[in-house]
Length: 293
Image 1 (cartoon, rainbow, N blue to C red):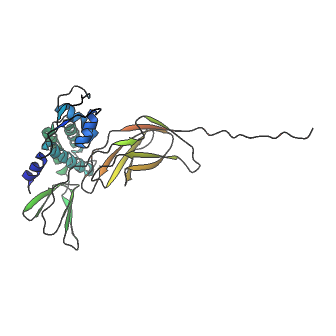
Image 2 (cartoon, helix red, strand yellow):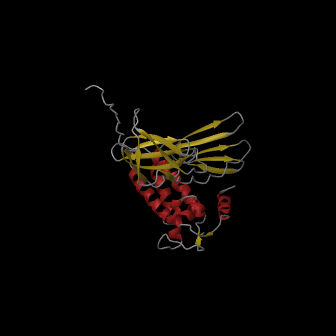
Image 3 (cartoon, one colour):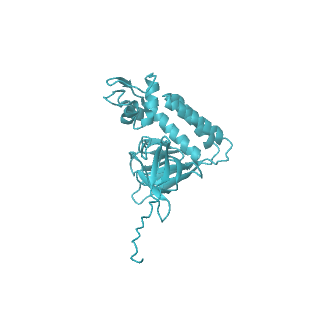
């Protein structure tokens, strides 16, 4: 199975969708693309002037070049994340990646893929090629590419590139598996955007707040980026689709991305909330009248 077969399989996906009663453009994007943020793509792809859609409207869906552009973006993000922060062309690559993401949001998938590949080349060329190969007791081989140029894995007459940040497991006597579909973007559910939380003060320290989001198929974990109005940004791992974190009173912004051994999704749209401590309850002391005169 080569890239032509992958394209053929992607071509089997539906090419249009009908808007249901009460469905917003973001909900259509979630249903068809697995990402509410895809609303901007549907808007650009169908020449819509705003996000209002009438039930029964037929919307054109992205073709297979969207999937290929997503893979190029994921590869570029992984390479940029692993690049030395002082690398000569890192800033240029970051600007190129930002350009690619703007193209993607505007449904210009071919331009997005080309710009993302350009960003990847800028940082990959400055990194040494590093990879590992491990064979287990059943004869399965796992190849992990850590940096630099892509590694080509060949088995049973099939060749597959493995880009930096990716790993491929090849079963004995089998060809390399087809690339997995890119991870969907998590959708935050709690706390609601701009919500003000009132928590009871705790003797043991700051009160815990639960951050939650919808699970993403294929995710093996999540990364939460928490940014306080005052203080340093924190990146917190989560094994499930929620995270309890103790927070002092103040304003916060946060986003979440899905992660697996092979890839990291785009970060969700940032949401904000505020934590305020509830005032302590007054102590009600009852004084009994004295019998002394």
